[in-house]
Image (spheres, rainbow, N blue to C red):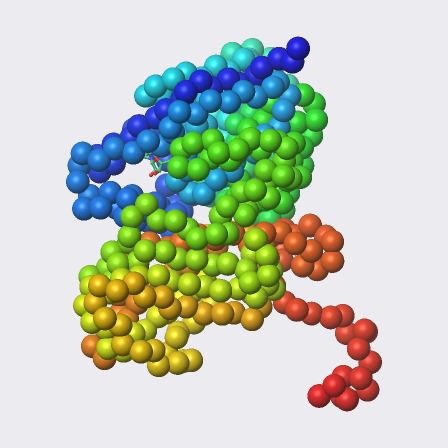
Length: 422
Ligand SMILES: Nc1ncnc2c1ncn2[C@@H]1O[C@H](COP(=O)(O)OP(=O)(O)O)[C@@H](O)[C@H]1O
Ligand SMILES: [Mg+2]
């Protein structure tokens, strides 16, 4: 019989939205990921309607699962699906409202929220503090110390208070500590996305190594190639519930096909004049969106007033809100007037989507050009571009950026051919 490392039974966590108080420093603040923070705020407001103080949300809703010791499991799900809440409960940062969670063994964690680092203490002091919290002896920590510092590449700053660290240094040290301390269980939230591509790679390799040595790992990431290559199993969370758990490739595929369909909205997203009911980015040739696929972007909405000269602007953003490209319907067509109260749909067909595998956001503006009215939909919508063989079979990482190029090596086309092709 196999050993159980983690067991959750009917785990539920309720949060009050509106009365949003935070008692600990959020790593997101440290890394000043302002974009993500404002995104969450918008999302909360959107779900909360008028922002009334007495709305509750089930961040986790009756979650039960077991993880065998030594398993490396990816936790996947959209933003807001409860991944961080789950890791916070498992690492005892927060208590479940109902149900219970058992973990067998010591737990190391690298969470979105404070990893137990004290901002006023130096890197050195924090390493010792973390080791002590895990019940390690001083001599044990000393043995790990050099390894951690070398891995994190913070030798020069080891006696500087961590509050002076750059976001990259902070995450590197936090990961170094979590990965090198001898804990039976390691919980890693998606903070690794902060580090540079090379360091990410190093962390992924480290996790693979740790996993192969029998430690149990729960790994939250939006990077599906990383999840596929590190984990043997995955668990999908959707609105606080486990909707699937199983073999890695099959489960990731299932996740990708779930999210590539319409982002079903809890409720319509309101602007003054429009009520947006659905936003969809879908491939014309398959169940999931892949690089260079022909895709459609469909925006469904109900105008609250007659719209004489409807307009739509759609743009694609990276998850850190860098605008990659935008399209304005006005540059293509003049649309027929839309009567108030009737569901309308506007959008685009894109011949070939030049986005690399990853998660992106769609931003939408709805307009009535006759009234010079432009309304920005106060929430973005996420979609995933599934990993495919964009440039042959190689694994893509941050070095390849967000934009895919249809390219050929020069030597494949002789000059003569190139000329006659024109
Ligand atoms: N401290 C909190 N107070 C109120 N709501 C929260 C809090 N933490 C998380 N939530 C809400 O709980 C839901 C799940 O959040 P989270 O676990 O962070 O999701 P994920 O990590 O999958 O993005 C979201 O709707 C989020 O807004
Ligand atoms: Mg999270």
